[in-house]
Structure formats: C-alpha cells, structure tokens
Image (cartoon, rainbow, N blue to C red; front, side):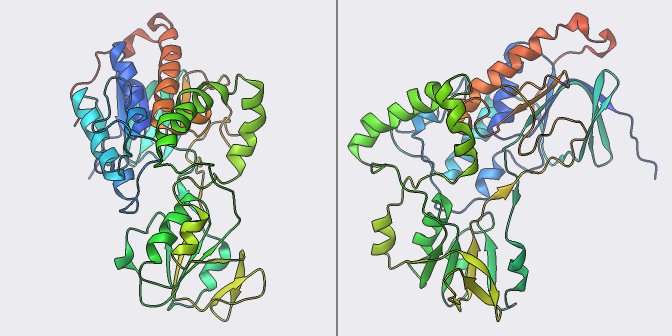
Length: 377
C-alpha cells in the first residue's frame, strides 16, 4: 500500500489542543486567520480527565474562563478537573474550532520559508507554527526506581487516579509539593502513608476561608500574578528563575492536615536497599506502594530547530525572534506568573496572535492563502 505523503498546507498550525491551543485558535478565528489545531489526545480535555479523580483547581471559576466564554458555576467555587475538561470541550464546540484529535506531532522542521509538521505519515506545511504545550510533558522518576522489588507497586502522580489502584500495605508518596500532599492525604484514608520530600512552605491562609475568597485570591489573581510578577518588572525578572526552579508552596493542604491524617513525614528518598526505598537518614521503608510525585521534564526532541535553551525555548513573550513564524504558548511563566493559569494563558495567546497578524499576507506566498478551516472534526 502506498501512503500519500503530499503535505497539506495550513497558514497556521497550532500544536496542542488544551487550554493554550484552544484560546490561540479563538484569537486566530476572531481575526479571520486560517488555522488548524492538532492534538494527540482522542478527546478535547483528556489531559485533564486523566489526572487523579479528586483534583480541584486552586483558582476559582471566576478566574478560569478563557477569552470569550465564562466558566460556568458559582464564581468563587473551585472547579474539578473533569469540569475543566468539559469546559474546554464546550469551548471548542461553541466557537467551532478546527481541532484534529488523535494526531501526535513527532517532527517540526524548517522548509525554506515555511515549516513542515510531521505526525506519523501525515505532513503539514505552515507559514506559522504555535507550540501550545505545557512546560513539562514527560513524567519523571529517579533512575533507581527500577531497582525496587517487583512486588512494590509504583505509580507516577500522572498515573494515579484513586485508592482502588493501590495494593494492601503502606504507601510512600515521594514529593511533598501540592500533588504529593493531596495524594498522600487521600491514601492515608486507607493506608499507612509516608510523605517524603523537602518542605516548600505554604500560603499564609486557608484557601476556602472568607479572607482568601474576598481578599487574598483576588489580590493574587488580579494583581500580583497577572501584573506584578511579569518579565517586564524588576521583581518579576528576579523571582522568575526561583519560581521556575522550586516547588510551589502548599495551597490547599496545611501541614496540620497531614499530621491529623496520621501521615509521617520522611527524609528524602536517595536510593534502594534490598528492594525497598532508602531514605537520606538511613531508614528503609518496607512499603508496598510508591507514588512518585516527582514532577515532569520537558520534551522538545521533536523540534529540529535551534530554538532551545538550557531549560526552556528561547523566546520573548512566546515570540521566537530567531525563527520567524514560530511561537510558544502555554509555558509556565511565559510572560507572567499567571501564564500557568487559564486567565493568564488567554492574554499570552492574544499577544502571540497579534504578532502573527503583523506577518501580513503580502509577506507570505499568495498561493498558500486559503479560507479558515471549517467545523472541528
């Protein structure tokens, strides 16, 4: 059988159909610019649906809406991960965004004055490419994890859904950030649980308190994260490397919550001894389950362009000066601390699309101009 590799031309290809890619599509649509969104998931919102069942956002619904569509529900309540997934699917439907699901991009190269995007045996030529993906995509566990006894169940936080996955016996949650603390609190309801990892502190208020809802949360989302901590302010430039390199403070779980649940704090996991986790203080924990909340790593190996720095792509507010027509949206602290929130990614997307629009069509090959694709499929 002969595979047809004739490339399909689209003026702008958006890689990623999460909140970043969809809101980029919204702004492109509003300007009448032709585009297509490619997403590896089978269904819009799946990247949220696949997270653990009890996950709720830290941002209230009033700050979760993307451009053009309010997030439904009580504005000061915190949505679940499934509500976010359903909202994203409704967003794509509402604005008839052209999303092709089940298309995993595996190569991006420059081809003269265009880009070539490859996804298996499919090829797309584009004048502009927006990489609309999160900073970290690949779950990471320490190399010594493979030395644990085969009888010890191991899950990364990205694989953990609920208690039903665990086997009888103790649970060690490795990584004491927000994900680790919340998962440990859940596992402690049915298992002896240890939580290992450094303490990154906590926010100085209860997230569900009246003071938080009326004072601290609006202050953070409206002012500090959105306007103060940006790449354009001295304090933002100073704090950005620290925020990117360290874990966030605990937001919903308080240290006293962990104590009340009977969770024992453990030293850092440094290796394996006789098939079980070895702690920095020399203790060996003979647990039957390990949940690795050890974070993610970036994977830009499929981008064959000289745009990658030591820790992130080289860009300014998502615009790559060295590769005209290439953009990034969805990166944590791309412009501001709020870039990691739904509200912030909307602003980042609008900025990038304005730049795409300045690449006037008279500068692009006229044969490539076409009408915007139709309804999502």
